[in-house]
Amino acid sequence: MQSSTPKNHTIEVDEQVYDVLARTAATRDTDINGALRYLIEAPEVPAASSEDDEE
Image (cartoon, rainbow, N blue to C red; front, top):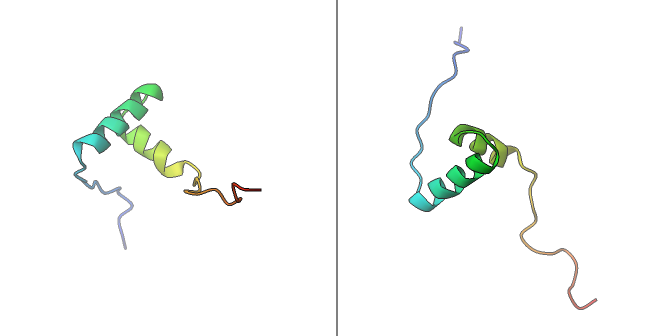
């Protein structure tokens, strides 16, 4: 039988990534974990426009 206890994972990120997480946390009035949850749950944004710019 497997335990349902959540596991902790440590992920090292670049200082610039940490700065983005810290700013996101500050604007959302949360901590770094809350900012991560927010960014993970955010809907996907297409990288490029699906329409031609010339039309």
